[in-house]
Each structure stands twice: as C-alpha cells, then as structure tokens.
Image 1 (cartoon, rainbow, N blue to C red):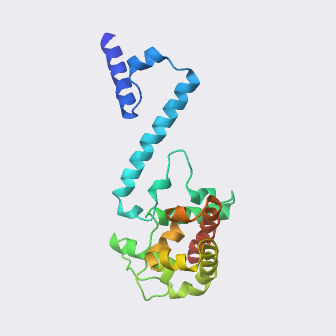
Image 2 (cartoon, one colour; image 1 turned 30 degrees about the vertical axis):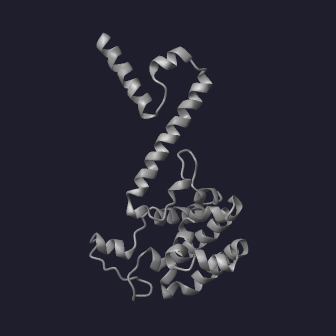
Image 3 (cartoon, rainbow, N blue to C red; image 1 turned 120 degrees about the vertical axis):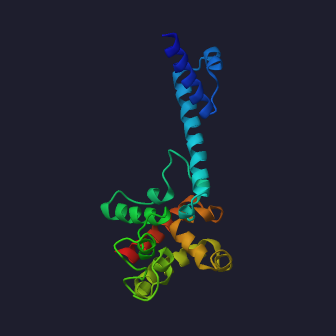
Length: 211
C-alpha cells in the first residue's frame, strides 16, 4: 500500500514538473479553488504542448509552409476559422491542410516513395514534375482557372499593403506559395479580417487546382 501511494505521488510530481506547475507541497499549502486550479492546469497544458508543437515544426521540412508562431493548442488554425460549415468548404479545407502539412500526395511524392510504379510527371500538363509549387503556381494546364483567383488575391493584398510592398514581400514564388498556404507568416502586415479574407481566396486557388 505504501509503495502504491509513493508511486502515485511520484507520478503526480512528474506531471507537475512536465507542465512547470507548483510542486505538491506548494499546492497543499496554497490550496487554490477548484476553478482556479482547473484554469491553471489548462493554461499550463496548452503552453507546454504548444512549445512542443513549435519544436516539432522546426525539425520537419514537410512543415516548412506552416507558420508556427501563431499556432496554439486549443485554438483552431486560421484556415478552419475562415471556412463555413459546408461540406464543399470543409473538403477544400482538408485539401489545403494536407498541402500545408506536407501530406498531400503529389506525383513527385508518389515517385519518391515508389507508389504504384508512378513517375513524377504532372498528369494534367504531362510536361513538368508535379509538386505543390507546380500545382499552385506553374502548371500550364491550370493557368486560366488558377489566374482568376490569383488575380483576386493579388488585388486584395495590394489594396491593403500597396503595390510597392507587394513587390517587396512577394517578388518570388516561395513567398507567394507561403501566402497561399499560410498567410499568417505575414500577419504583421494584415489585421485579422484581412487574414481571413486572404485565406478564403487562397483556399479557392487550391480548390481550383484540384477539383
């Protein structure tokens, strides 16, 4: 019995240390109210796992388009907050989330992992290797349908930051790709409403290239 109690309190202390919370003795002395302790635990858990999430993102090249600084456990990503609860929009959101997290299956990915004896050539244009950049920015077969939403995106961004700032921030394809996949990276240039609008338009760019 004594051993069981000792193991139990030892485990409790380990958990408190993991979440950088006061030790057992301090809690017994302070004895916070139930609501105050629940709030304290919630904040500690969110902070700890948010930090671990950010560390994971830094170590994974597949997550290079995901902006870690605005992520927080318990808070949905801007992508999900920009969508309505409609089947069509949720499907668009899922596709974009897969691209954002490096889990979308392109021909280049299939070829890399030797899936179904495939090659890396885009099945639409049959010319270039198909990766995320090719799908969203380069594929000639998708140019006309993609350009419709890309033009709207550019007009919206220039309306907010001006053409000079557009050229400064988005003068290369990598920056434009990041704008489409996760504009939170540029949050210092946009308010919350702007980010929501930009996210909605960029999600349509993704869906126009897939569906």
